[in-house]
Length: 183
Image (cartoon, rainbow, N blue to C red; front, side, top):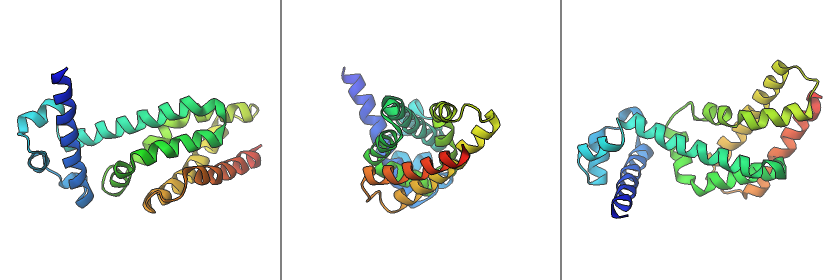
């Protein structure tokens, strides 16, 4: 039990140090040495968990994407607006992480989010538009995802101040109008 708690603590301080550095500079400027100094650990401890700063970034993103997918799967049956609200609430719970990753992290993060959510969203679009060819459904998803991503980028950049329920309702209206237009 103690080892698990110690491991969790060590990973937490490594991540906090990394995020503090990521707030100030892009990931390609962050050194393992700087992360270790901030976390007050030695390099061997860092390398026990991560290969380098990019590996740490990847692991953080994987956790975020898994959380988003879990929120999406748990709420998909309750409708699009509720699903969007759950996703936004999940993002808000990890606001600092999203803000920092969007500012100085991986420029491909939005694409990864779209790819992660594609399966569930593609099923929803297929149910709404069964006669629409697969390639057109992919276009529709891409269109909707890019628009939703733009709204998310603005919401994150503005400090996630607006209520997730209001943002979800706005996004749902935009998505619904796109789905209706495609039919």
